[in-house]
Image (cartoon, rainbow, N blue to C red; front, top):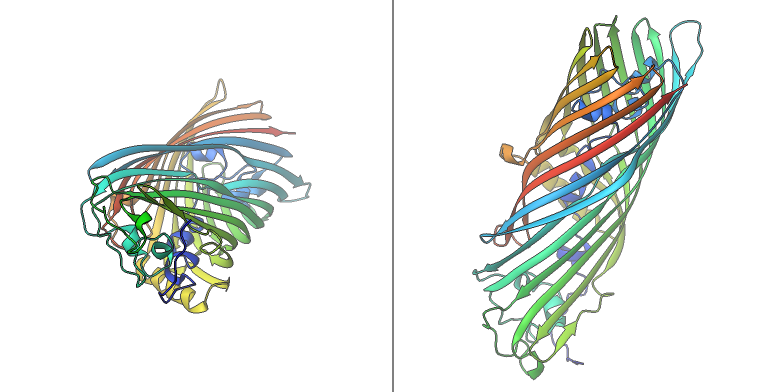
Amino acid sequence: MFYRNIQLTLIVIIFSTFIFSQNYNDALRVSVPGLGASARALGMGNSYISLSDDGSASFFNPAGLGLVKKLEFMGGIDITSFNNSTKFFNQTTESNSSQTKLDNISLTFPIPTLRGSLVFGLSYNTTKDFVGSLEFSGFNNGSNSKIQSLLDTDIPFDLYLTDDNGNTIINGRLNQSGNMLNSGSLNQWTLTGAIEAYKNLFIGANISVVSGNFNSDFDYYEDDTQNIYQGETAPGYPSTTDFRTFYLKNLLKWDIEGWNAKVGFLYQFEKIARLGLTIQFPKVYKINEDFNVEGRSVFANSSVTLDPDKFSDKVKYDITSPYEISGGTSLNLKGLIFSAQATYIDYKEMEFSNGEGISSTYFSDQNKRIKNLMRPVVNYNLGAEYTFPDIGLRVRGGFILQPSAFKNDPSDFDKKYLTAGVGILSDGVIGIDIAYAYGWWKDIGDNYDSNVSRTFQDITYHKVMLTTSYRF
């Protein structure tokens, strides 16, 4: 075991790199909308604000619940697959992650009225999944490395990769590799109420209690594959001769709580067309974060391990998402339904607050970065459904566009989905719906600094959703 006299002025608290790891990507994680929890809606590209005539109205448009005439039970599951083809210094690596989960349970109660309608609903929905993966490997010929980027922390020093003054002989030219797996989801219990306030005009509102989790496991390596660093990385310590590998593991765990509210309006033009409008108020997420760091340096005849307690931390903070203002319309032409909607989101409104264990000045700086880097966007949804009257079979197709939240991002970074689905409603009582969504977009990621160790990612996304319903 090594013992080292510490002559360096230590930076005991790692402000910039680890303890204060929260940034705009964390805010985006919970602010970008998910794909919902209804197979019928997904099959139509989630263009559902002007339809919403079932239990999924609690997610899409609470006013639509006023169209439900019978007691209804609904439930469903989905399977998600995330595929990432990552290019890193001209080397391409494939990775995949998937998860299966219960995504919807709802019970809808119409209340008998003399005129109009009064309907209540209680539902559980998985509103978003956090499944993701990344793998990369390539030789970085530049004079930079993760080791060098961490010189303002104790990590290279504690791993005997520097002298007693914090200087290192490491000067890039290392093979860099890594793998990451993300998992988790956002879920909410929602209480919804809707009334027919005037003939064919429905108004609804809901309030949701949010729970969820997010887990990220990232392993990162730098290897001296060309035997460049044969001397002592820590002068005076012969065991540090012939550097081989630097390894760093970041484990991030979130427990998420929160709440949100939505109001909606829906107007029905007899049986020909509908208009829908919703206002999703800012969602408040309370994040309990557990951040753990492990590390190791490997030499020809020895290795050194970090003290994980020194570089790990638990913090709490809030993330507030932007308003979401949506409007949509649908047209029914003898069993052929066309629908379209748009949603305005200003990602500059994302905000960190109420940090425990984090300085208020740090969050103030992050909130400024959000305003400088983000932009308002308009998401678009298009859908169609045709019902074969003789057999009750319904076929669907749709498209979803979610533009990137970052200013000046090219369209390749916009999330795009093609969707399709089929369903059957037997005697107006039993419904079975299946939907499939295929998504694609590009992304980039920096292992440290900016554009010196960058991954270029081509992402494809698959989701299969099954929903069943029973109307009493």
